[in-house]
Image 1 (cartoon, one colour):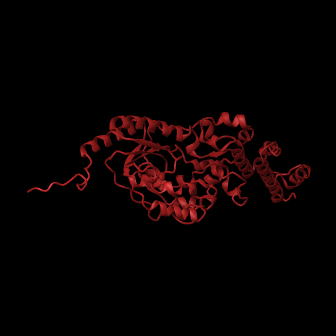
Image 2: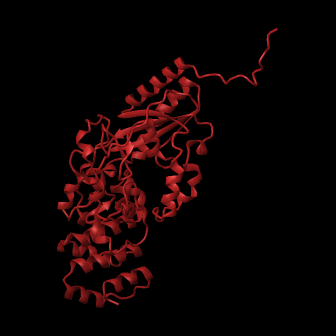
Image 3: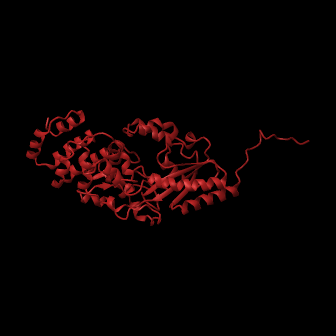
Amino acid sequence: MRTLISNETSSPPQPDRRRQEKLTAFIKAEAAAQGFDLCRITHAGSIPEATARLDIFLADGHHGTMGWMEETRDRRGSPTALWPEVRSVVMFGLNYGPDEDPRALQAKPSQGAISVYARNRDYHDVIKGRLKEIATRFAARAGEDVKVFVDTAPVMEKPLAEAAGLGWQGKHTNLLSRSHGSWLFLGSLFTTADLILDAPEVDHCGSCRACLDACPTNAFPAPYRLDARRCISYLTIEHKGPIDPDLRPLIGNRIYGCDDCLAACPWNKFAVSASEMKLKARDDLKEPSLAFLLGLDDAAFRSFFSGSPVKRIGRDRFIRNVLMAAGNSADPKLIAPCLSLVRDASPVVRGMAIWALKQLMPAEEFERFATSAQGEHDPEVLDEWRLAGAL
């Protein structure tokens, strides 16, 4: 007599290996066709340690004013918390490595240093457009659901990229690749399809601490840990108000982001040539004149940075950064454009204009200027006058 086993107690059906291989090959071919330099795959539960690391970061207050990181904490810990049906996570890398060391611009203090990634079209738009093309074709081929993400959703892209084998999170907390150094844009595609998984990458930093030593503001309290409150990228992009006066001189002429820890990494020397589809930097964003940038009103700012991620922070915050760079420049030719901003409608601009003039003007000239400045009522701008010794 034979015993029949019902479907309820039988083992779940195993994925069709042949189908997995075909779909995996298809999506990797599509990634190459769209210009991605790397494409690797991991499973949805591959980063179990990520939540604990995030909790330490938040508990230490290292996220600064980025409250959205706390608000989305529960969804960040795992792809399945964001989308319970996801089975495979496809990670994509696009090389954006510069043709020269961006730190060389520090020797030109009258020019502004814009982070390499922001010298062309907004990468969010570019990569998401390419991922949507891949997702549409993959969904049609696989008959599976897909979602794509590029940095704006609560997805822990760097740990997922490490788990997928694109690279590893270096001591500067950014993703490092043996083939592309520190210069990779990341994007992800979540799918309900079962795909062939790639092996995770291991840490290759060893005893090197070049990235940590390169940070102008000492933003790394320890290897693999970042205090965003001291990070120039955070201060010039995410932080909305006045910047800590003690940090201002250390920021130099960096007016949007900072590449120092990325550029210092020795792995950059082994990076292969980038794809022909790599974003090319706009010539007018490689070494923009501080004098020109200080003259941008809101309409001119929006026009000049059309399509650039710089546009996201708005004119006032950007001019605050440019004024800080002007104050660090020791260039007397920048006094006149700074003076024109002391009466600006934005308090954060007025405040930083005062600080910049204090750095640029001879002491007696600044004293005469300070006695003529009247009518200020904003408390943060008044704090800048006090800092300058004028109140």
